[in-house]
Image (cartoon, rainbow, N blue to C red):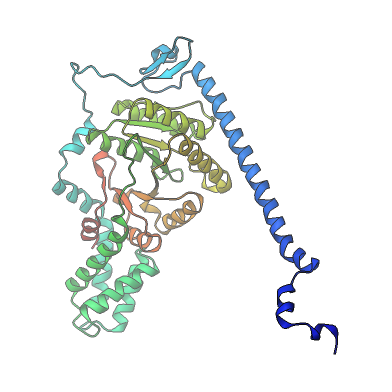
Length: 421
Protein backbone atom coordinates (compact mmCIF):
# COMPACT_ATOMS: atom_id res chain seq x y z
CA UNK A 1 0.00 0.00 0.00
CA UNK A 2 1.45 3.41 -1.00
CA UNK A 3 2.12 6.31 1.31
CA UNK A 4 -0.98 8.30 0.37
CA UNK A 5 -3.34 5.56 1.45
CA UNK A 6 -1.64 5.38 4.87
CA UNK A 7 -2.50 9.05 5.63
CA UNK A 8 -5.49 10.02 7.69
CA UNK A 9 -8.47 10.90 5.39
CA UNK A 10 -9.18 14.11 7.34
CA UNK A 11 -5.58 15.24 6.90
CA UNK A 12 -5.82 14.57 3.15
CA UNK A 13 -8.98 16.69 2.99
CA UNK A 14 -7.33 19.60 4.86
CA UNK A 15 -4.34 19.68 2.52
CA UNK A 16 -6.34 19.12 -0.66
CA UNK A 17 -5.85 21.85 -3.25
CA UNK A 18 -2.84 23.35 -1.54
CA UNK A 19 -0.58 22.73 -4.49
CA UNK A 20 0.80 25.56 -6.60
CA UNK A 21 -1.08 24.42 -9.72
CA UNK A 22 -4.41 24.49 -7.90
CA UNK A 23 -3.85 28.01 -6.55
CA UNK A 24 -2.83 29.18 -10.01
CA UNK A 25 -6.03 27.70 -11.43
CA UNK A 26 -8.15 29.58 -8.87
CA UNK A 27 -6.17 32.80 -8.55
CA UNK A 28 -5.37 33.29 -12.23
CA UNK A 29 -8.90 34.18 -13.39
CA UNK A 30 -9.39 36.43 -10.35
CA UNK A 31 -6.23 38.36 -11.21
CA UNK A 32 -7.29 38.70 -14.88
CA UNK A 33 -10.78 39.93 -13.93
CA UNK A 34 -9.25 42.41 -11.47
CA UNK A 35 -6.93 43.78 -14.15
CA UNK A 36 -9.83 44.24 -16.58
CA UNK A 37 -11.88 45.99 -13.87
CA UNK A 38 -9.05 48.41 -13.13
CA UNK A 39 -8.49 49.13 -16.84
CA UNK A 40 -12.23 49.73 -17.36
CA UNK A 41 -12.37 52.06 -14.35
CA UNK A 42 -9.41 54.04 -15.71
CA UNK A 43 -11.05 54.33 -19.14
CA UNK A 44 -14.32 55.58 -17.60
CA UNK A 45 -12.39 58.06 -15.45
CA UNK A 46 -10.46 59.39 -18.46
CA UNK A 47 -13.68 59.70 -20.48
CA UNK A 48 -15.43 61.62 -17.69
CA UNK A 49 -12.42 63.92 -17.29
CA UNK A 50 -12.38 64.59 -21.03
CA UNK A 51 -16.11 65.34 -21.10
CA UNK A 52 -15.76 67.64 -18.12
CA UNK A 53 -12.89 69.46 -19.82
CA UNK A 54 -14.93 69.82 -23.01
CA UNK A 55 -17.83 71.27 -21.04
CA UNK A 56 -15.57 73.70 -19.23
CA UNK A 57 -14.21 74.92 -22.57
CA UNK A 58 -17.73 75.12 -23.96
CA UNK A 59 -18.92 77.06 -20.93
CA UNK A 60 -15.97 79.46 -21.25
CA UNK A 61 -16.92 80.00 -24.86
CA UNK A 62 -20.51 80.59 -23.85
CA UNK A 63 -19.36 83.17 -21.34
CA UNK A 64 -17.85 85.06 -24.27
CA UNK A 65 -20.64 84.28 -26.77
CA UNK A 66 -24.10 84.26 -25.23
CA UNK A 67 -26.27 81.32 -26.40
CA UNK A 68 -28.91 82.73 -28.72
CA UNK A 69 -32.63 82.41 -28.04
CA UNK A 70 -35.84 84.13 -29.17
CA UNK A 71 -35.26 86.75 -26.44
CA UNK A 72 -31.73 87.53 -27.54
CA UNK A 73 -30.18 89.66 -30.21
CA UNK A 74 -27.17 89.02 -32.37
CA UNK A 75 -25.57 92.22 -31.07
CA UNK A 76 -24.29 90.72 -27.87
CA UNK A 77 -24.93 89.53 -24.35
CA UNK A 78 -26.67 92.67 -23.23
CA UNK A 79 -29.61 91.77 -25.48
CA UNK A 80 -30.34 88.56 -23.58
CA UNK A 81 -32.95 88.71 -20.83
CA UNK A 82 -31.64 87.12 -17.65
CA UNK A 83 -27.97 87.50 -18.63
CA UNK A 84 -25.61 89.34 -16.33
CA UNK A 85 -21.90 89.84 -15.76
CA UNK A 86 -20.25 89.75 -12.39
CA UNK A 87 -17.54 92.13 -11.13
CA UNK A 88 -14.85 90.20 -13.02
CA UNK A 89 -16.77 90.41 -16.26
CA UNK A 90 -17.74 86.73 -16.26
CA UNK A 91 -21.13 85.78 -17.65
CA UNK A 92 -23.78 84.26 -15.43
CA UNK A 93 -27.47 83.43 -15.52
CA UNK A 94 -29.91 85.23 -13.27
CA UNK A 95 -33.50 84.55 -12.40
CA UNK A 96 -35.98 86.23 -14.71
CA UNK A 97 -37.92 89.05 -13.10
CA UNK A 98 -41.50 89.77 -14.07
CA UNK A 99 -43.14 93.15 -13.78
CA UNK A 100 -46.42 92.32 -12.08
CA UNK A 101 -47.97 95.53 -13.38
CA UNK A 102 -47.54 94.35 -16.97
CA UNK A 103 -50.37 92.05 -18.11
CA UNK A 104 -49.20 88.60 -19.18
CA UNK A 105 -50.05 87.83 -22.77
CA UNK A 106 -51.75 84.45 -23.15
CA UNK A 107 -51.14 82.92 -26.55
CA UNK A 108 -53.93 81.49 -28.69
CA UNK A 109 -52.60 77.94 -28.23
CA UNK A 110 -52.54 78.21 -24.43
CA UNK A 111 -55.99 79.78 -24.25
CA UNK A 112 -57.49 77.09 -26.49
CA UNK A 113 -56.04 74.36 -24.28
CA UNK A 114 -57.52 75.99 -21.19
CA UNK A 115 -60.96 76.31 -22.77
CA UNK A 116 -61.11 72.79 -24.22
CA UNK A 117 -63.16 70.69 -21.80
CA UNK A 118 -63.34 66.90 -21.69
CA UNK A 119 -66.43 66.73 -23.93
CA UNK A 120 -64.68 68.81 -26.60
CA UNK A 121 -61.58 66.64 -26.34
CA UNK A 122 -63.59 63.41 -26.66
CA UNK A 123 -65.15 64.83 -29.81
CA UNK A 124 -61.69 65.61 -31.20
CA UNK A 125 -60.45 62.14 -30.26
CA UNK A 126 -63.46 60.49 -31.86
CA UNK A 127 -62.89 62.45 -35.08
CA UNK A 128 -59.18 61.63 -34.99
CA UNK A 129 -59.83 57.90 -34.66
CA UNK A 130 -62.69 57.88 -37.20
CA UNK A 131 -60.61 56.09 -39.86
CA UNK A 132 -59.41 53.43 -37.45
CA UNK A 133 -62.91 52.96 -36.04
CA UNK A 134 -64.60 52.79 -39.48
CA UNK A 135 -62.04 50.27 -40.73
CA UNK A 136 -62.52 48.09 -37.67
CA UNK A 137 -66.34 48.27 -37.72
CA UNK A 138 -66.34 47.27 -41.38
CA UNK A 139 -64.13 44.26 -40.65
CA UNK A 140 -66.29 43.20 -37.70
CA UNK A 141 -69.44 43.50 -39.80
CA UNK A 142 -67.96 41.29 -42.54
CA UNK A 143 -66.88 38.69 -39.98
CA UNK A 144 -70.19 38.46 -38.14
CA UNK A 145 -72.68 38.93 -40.99
CA UNK A 146 -74.69 35.72 -41.39
CA UNK A 147 -73.04 34.10 -38.35
CA UNK A 148 -75.39 32.83 -35.66
CA UNK A 149 -72.80 31.74 -33.13
CA UNK A 150 -69.31 32.62 -32.02
CA UNK A 151 -67.53 29.47 -33.22
CA UNK A 152 -63.80 28.92 -33.55
CA UNK A 153 -63.73 30.01 -37.18
CA UNK A 154 -65.31 33.36 -36.27
CA UNK A 155 -62.73 33.84 -33.52
CA UNK A 156 -59.90 33.05 -35.97
CA UNK A 157 -61.31 35.58 -38.46
CA UNK A 158 -61.54 38.10 -35.63
CA UNK A 159 -57.89 37.50 -34.75
CA UNK A 160 -56.85 37.97 -38.40
CA UNK A 161 -58.79 41.25 -38.62
CA UNK A 162 -57.15 42.57 -35.48
CA UNK A 163 -53.73 41.65 -36.82
CA UNK A 164 -54.42 43.49 -40.09
CA UNK A 165 -55.40 46.52 -38.02
CA UNK A 166 -51.82 46.64 -36.64
CA UNK A 167 -52.88 45.37 -33.22
CA UNK A 168 -50.10 42.79 -33.30
CA UNK A 169 -50.11 39.07 -32.49
CA UNK A 170 -49.78 39.28 -28.68
CA UNK A 171 -52.47 41.94 -28.26
CA UNK A 172 -54.76 40.16 -30.76
CA UNK A 173 -54.38 36.93 -28.76
CA UNK A 174 -55.30 38.77 -25.57
CA UNK A 175 -58.31 40.48 -27.13
CA UNK A 176 -59.72 37.31 -28.72
CA UNK A 177 -59.20 35.30 -25.52
CA UNK A 178 -61.16 37.95 -23.64
CA UNK A 179 -64.01 37.74 -26.17
CA UNK A 180 -64.00 33.95 -25.81
CA UNK A 181 -64.15 34.13 -22.00
CA UNK A 182 -66.63 37.01 -21.81
CA UNK A 183 -69.17 35.94 -24.40
CA UNK A 184 -68.40 32.24 -24.47
CA UNK A 185 -67.63 30.02 -27.41
CA UNK A 186 -70.64 28.92 -29.48
CA UNK A 187 -72.88 31.62 -27.98
CA UNK A 188 -74.70 34.18 -30.11
CA UNK A 189 -72.41 36.28 -32.32
CA UNK A 190 -73.72 39.67 -31.23
CA UNK A 191 -71.65 42.48 -32.85
CA UNK A 192 -72.39 44.89 -29.97
CA UNK A 193 -71.32 42.33 -27.35
CA UNK A 194 -68.11 41.55 -29.25
CA UNK A 195 -67.30 45.25 -29.61
CA UNK A 196 -67.91 45.85 -25.90
CA UNK A 197 -65.66 42.93 -24.94
CA UNK A 198 -62.90 44.22 -27.20
CA UNK A 199 -63.29 47.73 -25.80
CA UNK A 200 -63.07 46.43 -22.24
CA UNK A 201 -59.92 44.39 -22.82
CA UNK A 202 -58.27 47.16 -24.88
CA UNK A 203 -58.74 49.58 -21.98
CA UNK A 204 -57.17 47.02 -19.62
CA UNK A 205 -54.14 46.54 -21.88
CA UNK A 206 -53.60 50.29 -22.24
CA UNK A 207 -54.20 50.98 -18.55
CA UNK A 208 -51.67 48.41 -17.34
CA UNK A 209 -48.85 50.75 -18.28
CA UNK A 210 -50.65 54.10 -18.43
CA UNK A 211 -50.99 54.26 -14.65
CA UNK A 212 -47.20 54.49 -14.16
CA UNK A 213 -46.68 57.75 -12.24
CA UNK A 214 -44.49 60.50 -13.64
CA UNK A 215 -41.05 60.85 -12.11
CA UNK A 216 -41.06 64.45 -10.91
CA UNK A 217 -38.45 65.90 -8.55
CA UNK A 218 -39.53 67.57 -5.32
CA UNK A 219 -37.28 70.55 -6.09
CA UNK A 220 -35.69 72.03 -9.16
CA UNK A 221 -36.70 71.76 -12.81
CA UNK A 222 -38.42 68.68 -14.18
CA UNK A 223 -36.18 67.60 -17.07
CA UNK A 224 -37.81 65.68 -19.92
CA UNK A 225 -35.67 64.32 -22.76
CA UNK A 226 -37.60 64.04 -26.04
CA UNK A 227 -36.36 61.45 -28.57
CA UNK A 228 -37.61 60.11 -31.89
CA UNK A 229 -36.65 59.66 -35.52
CA UNK A 230 -36.77 62.59 -37.91
CA UNK A 231 -40.16 63.17 -39.48
CA UNK A 232 -42.43 61.98 -36.65
CA UNK A 233 -43.27 65.52 -35.53
CA UNK A 234 -40.91 65.53 -32.57
CA UNK A 235 -40.10 69.24 -32.53
CA UNK A 236 -43.72 70.24 -33.16
CA UNK A 237 -44.78 67.95 -30.32
CA UNK A 238 -42.34 69.73 -28.00
CA UNK A 239 -44.02 73.01 -28.91
CA UNK A 240 -47.45 71.55 -28.14
CA UNK A 241 -46.25 70.10 -24.84
CA UNK A 242 -44.87 73.52 -23.95
CA UNK A 243 -48.29 75.06 -24.53
CA UNK A 244 -49.86 72.48 -22.21
CA UNK A 245 -47.37 73.15 -19.42
CA UNK A 246 -47.90 76.89 -19.83
CA UNK A 247 -51.66 76.33 -19.59
CA UNK A 248 -50.97 74.74 -16.19
CA UNK A 249 -49.12 77.88 -15.04
CA UNK A 250 -45.68 76.27 -15.30
CA UNK A 251 -42.50 78.08 -16.32
CA UNK A 252 -40.96 76.27 -19.30
CA UNK A 253 -37.53 76.39 -20.91
CA UNK A 254 -36.52 74.63 -24.13
CA UNK A 255 -33.10 73.29 -25.16
CA UNK A 256 -32.43 72.71 -28.87
CA UNK A 257 -29.98 69.81 -28.61
CA UNK A 258 -30.76 68.53 -32.11
CA UNK A 259 -27.79 70.39 -33.52
CA UNK A 260 -27.38 67.98 -36.42
CA UNK A 261 -30.45 69.25 -38.30
CA UNK A 262 -30.59 73.03 -38.64
CA UNK A 263 -34.34 73.04 -39.37
CA UNK A 264 -34.99 71.45 -35.97
CA UNK A 265 -33.39 74.35 -34.13
CA UNK A 266 -35.17 76.94 -36.25
CA UNK A 267 -38.52 75.19 -35.81
CA UNK A 268 -38.11 75.09 -32.04
CA UNK A 269 -37.22 78.80 -32.03
CA UNK A 270 -40.44 79.54 -33.95
CA UNK A 271 -42.42 77.75 -31.25
CA UNK A 272 -40.51 79.67 -28.60
CA UNK A 273 -41.44 82.94 -30.28
CA UNK A 274 -45.11 81.96 -30.55
CA UNK A 275 -45.35 80.89 -26.91
CA UNK A 276 -43.01 83.46 -25.37
CA UNK A 277 -40.60 80.81 -24.13
CA UNK A 278 -36.80 81.00 -24.24
CA UNK A 279 -34.92 78.45 -26.32
CA UNK A 280 -31.32 77.65 -25.39
CA UNK A 281 -29.42 76.87 -28.59
CA UNK A 282 -25.90 76.86 -29.95
CA UNK A 283 -24.60 76.92 -33.48
CA UNK A 284 -25.38 74.05 -35.84
CA UNK A 285 -22.98 71.16 -35.31
CA UNK A 286 -22.31 72.05 -31.66
CA UNK A 287 -22.04 69.33 -29.04
CA UNK A 288 -25.65 68.33 -28.12
CA UNK A 289 -24.54 67.49 -24.56
CA UNK A 290 -23.20 71.04 -24.18
CA UNK A 291 -26.59 72.45 -25.22
CA UNK A 292 -28.36 70.18 -22.75
CA UNK A 293 -25.85 71.12 -20.05
CA UNK A 294 -26.40 74.82 -20.68
CA UNK A 295 -30.18 74.26 -20.67
CA UNK A 296 -30.00 72.64 -17.24
CA UNK A 297 -27.83 75.47 -15.90
CA UNK A 298 -30.28 78.07 -17.17
CA UNK A 299 -33.31 76.14 -15.92
CA UNK A 300 -31.84 75.88 -12.41
CA UNK A 301 -30.80 79.54 -12.30
CA UNK A 302 -34.16 80.75 -13.54
CA UNK A 303 -36.12 78.33 -11.35
CA UNK A 304 -37.95 76.89 -14.34
CA UNK A 305 -40.58 74.24 -13.65
CA UNK A 306 -39.98 72.25 -16.83
CA UNK A 307 -37.03 71.82 -19.18
CA UNK A 308 -37.77 70.06 -22.47
CA UNK A 309 -34.68 68.89 -24.38
CA UNK A 310 -34.97 68.18 -28.10
CA UNK A 311 -32.52 65.57 -29.47
CA UNK A 312 -31.35 64.24 -32.80
CA UNK A 313 -33.18 61.36 -34.46
CA UNK A 314 -30.46 59.71 -36.51
CA UNK A 315 -31.52 56.13 -35.84
CA UNK A 316 -29.68 54.92 -38.95
CA UNK A 317 -26.46 55.80 -37.09
CA UNK A 318 -27.49 53.89 -33.98
CA UNK A 319 -24.06 53.67 -32.39
CA UNK A 320 -23.46 57.40 -32.83
CA UNK A 321 -26.93 58.21 -31.49
CA UNK A 322 -26.43 55.87 -28.54
CA UNK A 323 -23.17 57.58 -27.62
CA UNK A 324 -24.73 61.02 -28.04
CA UNK A 325 -27.78 60.29 -25.88
CA UNK A 326 -25.64 58.46 -23.35
CA UNK A 327 -23.38 61.48 -23.05
CA UNK A 328 -26.38 63.82 -22.61
CA UNK A 329 -27.71 61.59 -19.84
CA UNK A 330 -24.36 61.48 -18.04
CA UNK A 331 -23.71 65.20 -18.35
CA UNK A 332 -27.07 66.51 -17.13
CA UNK A 333 -27.31 63.76 -14.51
CA UNK A 334 -23.94 64.81 -13.12
CA UNK A 335 -25.00 68.45 -12.88
CA UNK A 336 -28.59 67.78 -11.75
CA UNK A 337 -28.90 64.42 -9.95
CA UNK A 338 -31.82 62.37 -11.22
CA UNK A 339 -32.02 64.16 -14.58
CA UNK A 340 -33.37 63.43 -17.09
CA UNK A 341 -36.38 62.50 -14.99
CA UNK A 342 -38.37 61.31 -18.00
CA UNK A 343 -37.41 60.20 -21.51
CA UNK A 344 -40.31 60.24 -23.97
CA UNK A 345 -40.29 58.73 -27.45
CA UNK A 346 -42.42 60.48 -30.08
CA UNK A 347 -43.89 58.05 -32.64
CA UNK A 348 -45.98 58.61 -35.75
CA UNK A 349 -49.14 56.47 -35.74
CA UNK A 350 -49.34 56.51 -39.55
CA UNK A 351 -46.28 54.25 -39.74
CA UNK A 352 -48.15 51.32 -38.21
CA UNK A 353 -45.92 48.42 -37.21
CA UNK A 354 -42.85 50.49 -38.05
CA UNK A 355 -43.64 52.52 -34.93
CA UNK A 356 -43.23 49.27 -33.00
CA UNK A 357 -39.76 48.87 -34.49
CA UNK A 358 -38.88 52.42 -33.45
CA UNK A 359 -39.85 51.70 -29.85
CA UNK A 360 -37.72 48.55 -29.90
CA UNK A 361 -34.74 50.35 -31.44
CA UNK A 362 -34.82 53.32 -29.07
CA UNK A 363 -35.30 51.03 -26.08
CA UNK A 364 -31.87 49.63 -26.93
CA UNK A 365 -30.38 53.13 -27.04
CA UNK A 366 -31.94 54.81 -24.00
CA UNK A 367 -34.20 53.97 -21.06
CA UNK A 368 -37.65 55.07 -22.22
CA UNK A 369 -40.24 56.10 -19.65
CA UNK A 370 -43.14 57.03 -21.90
CA UNK A 371 -44.53 57.58 -25.40
CA UNK A 372 -46.14 60.49 -27.21
CA UNK A 373 -48.20 59.36 -30.22
CA UNK A 374 -48.83 61.82 -33.05
CA UNK A 375 -50.89 61.94 -36.27
CA UNK A 376 -53.68 59.62 -35.12
CA UNK A 377 -56.04 61.69 -37.25
CA UNK A 378 -54.43 60.69 -40.54
CA UNK A 379 -54.40 56.92 -40.24
CA UNK A 380 -56.49 53.78 -39.87
CA UNK A 381 -53.72 52.22 -37.75
CA UNK A 382 -54.69 53.36 -34.27
CA UNK A 383 -54.51 49.74 -33.13
CA UNK A 384 -50.72 49.94 -33.07
CA UNK A 385 -50.97 51.51 -29.60
CA UNK A 386 -52.38 48.23 -28.29
CA UNK A 387 -49.49 46.34 -29.82
CA UNK A 388 -46.94 48.68 -28.23
CA UNK A 389 -48.64 48.64 -24.82
CA UNK A 390 -48.90 44.84 -24.78
CA UNK A 391 -45.31 44.20 -25.87
CA UNK A 392 -43.35 46.98 -24.13
CA UNK A 393 -45.58 47.94 -21.16
CA UNK A 394 -44.63 51.59 -21.73
CA UNK A 395 -47.05 54.28 -20.56
CA UNK A 396 -48.53 56.47 -23.30
CA UNK A 397 -48.29 60.01 -21.94
CA UNK A 398 -49.94 62.04 -24.71
CA UNK A 399 -51.79 61.45 -27.99
CA UNK A 400 -52.20 63.89 -30.86
CA UNK A 401 -55.16 63.95 -33.23
CA UNK A 402 -54.57 67.18 -35.15
CA UNK A 403 -52.31 70.10 -35.94
CA UNK A 404 -53.28 72.41 -33.07
CA UNK A 405 -51.74 72.36 -29.61
CA UNK A 406 -55.19 71.60 -28.15
CA UNK A 407 -55.30 68.48 -30.36
CA UNK A 408 -52.59 66.98 -28.16
CA UNK A 409 -53.89 65.71 -24.85
CA UNK A 410 -52.88 63.57 -21.90
CA UNK A 411 -53.67 59.94 -22.69
CA UNK A 412 -56.66 58.22 -21.11
CA UNK A 413 -56.96 54.46 -21.76
CA UNK A 414 -60.75 54.33 -21.38
CA UNK A 415 -61.36 57.29 -23.67
CA UNK A 416 -59.03 55.89 -26.32
CA UNK A 417 -60.51 52.38 -26.26
CA UNK A 418 -64.04 53.79 -26.41
CA UNK A 419 -63.21 55.92 -29.43
CA UNK A 420 -61.29 53.14 -31.19
CA UNK A 421 -64.05 50.49 -31.01
